[in-house]
Image (cartoon, rainbow, N blue to C red):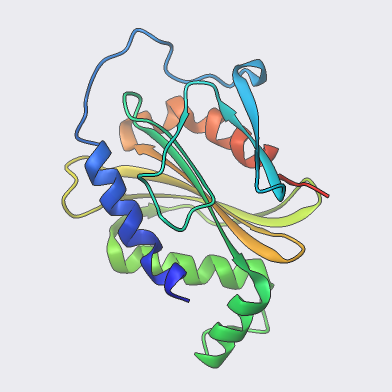
Length: 196
């Protein structure tokens, strides 16, 4: 389960490499207009709509099945997916899985513990349970400070339980841009769907 333990380290490293660029663009910052999104299919497994201003990358996280960014706008998104059965087995063995909670709630809690170990969390919203295209999901926002990065960052986190896998959609930007990109990040999350 090295995937879970290295996720944040790789994200922080990828972000620190790309966040030092601070160019100004004449393009409109955010866009909640769905016509300004492209639908992307990943491994014939799931699809998600992403803003046209984002470009594919491989620099954010080696374990992510989807990685898109716009370094000029400082807007990033990745999707991490893991087999449900493996997640449950490993964390039950570590006595870190609670049968009182759903699988997606357990996954959320594990990921939030990893966040708390690697950043100074200054604000965390209450998780909201929802359904995204028929799938159980949990969504929340975290504002915090990561060592080595001058500006505060806002993470938009969504945890989704699929048929065979559990997914984490993580979108982030600088704290002072979170309202600019909130609608875009919400559109990304709500567009997530499994391909049958």
